[in-house]
Length: 171
Image (tube, rainbow, N blue to C red; front, side, top):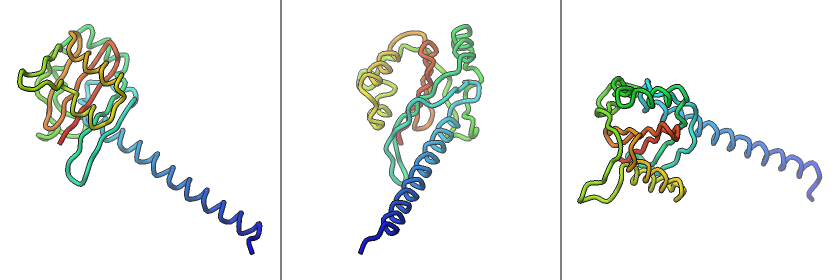
């Protein structure tokens, strides 16, 4: 026979399990944002993540992390242009090969004749990013006023007018 006590006990157990699962999900989201932010070079100021998603297995993965560029960095980039990035060659995490970026370049970026993908295509595709956002970012890399760099298995694009930093990774 089911008593009120048993029902209440089951309800408390379900609530406890839901709280644990929610806590684990929140912890994962915070860790993922911290991890991705660590890839962005130190001179570039980050306010907060706006979108992080991707696919991964045990060894490889692809996706995108989009952060809000802080106002001070956006203003400095607008004033200094490409010079702002002179010291933005290493991630916050490490100065090893995997966390080193090539010299920065200004947009527009046009895909190679043999490749119709833009800088962000692979990462945005893996992240299942909203089509409107993907199209907006894909168009923005073809316009002047933005800056990009490559690193091993990743590309980083800064959009100072939009105040966005986009890290696309693949591999």
